[in-house]
Image (cartoon, rainbow, N blue to C red; front, side, top):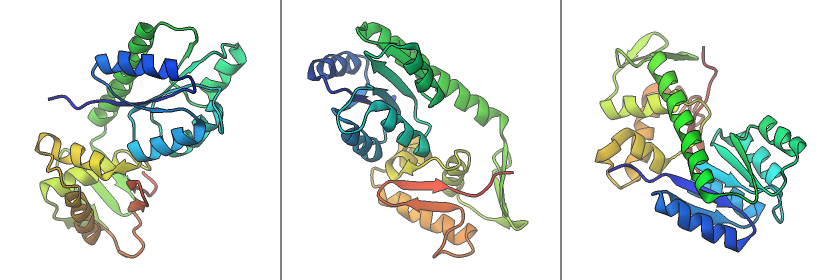
Length: 235
């Protein structure tokens, strides 16, 4: 069964949230909502959506500030949905890294189509990168996907199949923060065990094999309250 795609919709108008939640849920998306900028950031951190629909005129923190903060942490796709249709606002939005911009009033069906288009582009780009990149070199580590081998300081490291999958997922998305649930879904796929403690144990075993100092991991870093990311400078 296909995984549900989680979308965060941020708007301070309850009627719009109600319409979008109903329309997008009909398309099979899992919808979470927020009504101000601070709530949007909290939902982003806690729920880890795969796409964000973001209004600009929000209480507490406006949409531009929310976008700026998220872009410092993640490349999650963002679609602006706003009554601010000025060309300068659109230009600023795209310069900040948004993926699409739709002005109000809007047709919900058009928004659905734009969401599908953005997700399709992201998936195609990700698949292209993954298909072209067979080896990653980071610091003292060389990971070869085709051969399924890992070397640290030129020494071969024996990893289980799940350990290798976890390491490849992290290393091929440098500095992207994965929650334990996301890692479990990526590594186990249809065999997802349900218990995220399996991920914690997997990360611990990986660190024992590739890190010099378990107290100060250089590669697999913990982002407290969120999950894990892969650090280091790729070659």
